[in-house]
Image: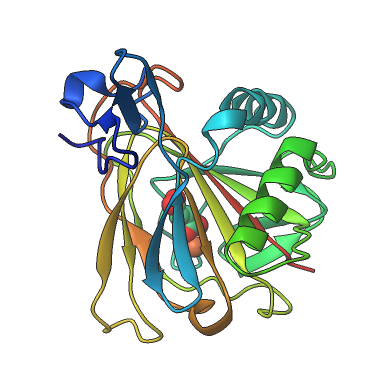
Amino acid sequence: VECVTAAITPVAVIKSASECGRFGERVMTDLFGDTEPVGPEREQLAPGAVVLHGRALAVQVDLLAAVDAVAAAAPFRRMLTPGGFRMSVAMTNCGAAGWVTDRKGYRYAPTDPETGKPWPAMPAAFLDLAAAAAAEAGFPGFEPDACLINRYEPGARLSLHQDRDERDTGHPIVSVSLGLPATFQFGGPKRSDPVRKVALRHGDVVVWGGPSRLFFHGVLTLKDGEHPATGRTRINLTLRKAL
Ligand code: SIN
Ligand code: FE2
């Protein structure tokens, strides 16, 4: 039973995988057979790092509509690493700055190199969720100015890396998962540190900051599947204060 983890009230019974919610979220079945999302359930990954399971479910429709609007103005593209490799993950951005990579290196840019125009504005739904999730994780007052939107298709992966292109790493990272599930790896300050693996499903939010802000992390190769909300893709929003 993959999507069900815990019964939280005495009158509630957790049932089989057939009781998973329409979008694969954790649900609880009560004595009357009604299901409702459980949570948000917290899973601590490291000091300063927590998964808020299901935290984005209530605003999933707004988030996905905003992703479509951003992508209509700044299309997803697979960027080139400084070493000359084409990334398997397709990316776009919104906010005052967007994360880009090409032969010249990694950086934040105020305009989209593909269109020459400023990145689309940060949607309010992104700002609100990021601020709320960060506060719940112990980082009040988070005001992201950059959102990298990652699109994974089956076979895509993101190797272990640190997020270190931001001006001030005193601010946390808020990462929102939508669509197909993925295995997230969360390690330590050194690339060689052991990693903890955690399944990230539709609606999960990860926040890391403070002592774990520069910890290595990555995403294992996406398995094939079909998700009711996104089809054959996983979308990840990574919200940061970059400038
Ligand atoms: C990232 O590290 O930029 C993305 C993480 C994810 O896709 O969950
Ligand atoms: Fe990252």
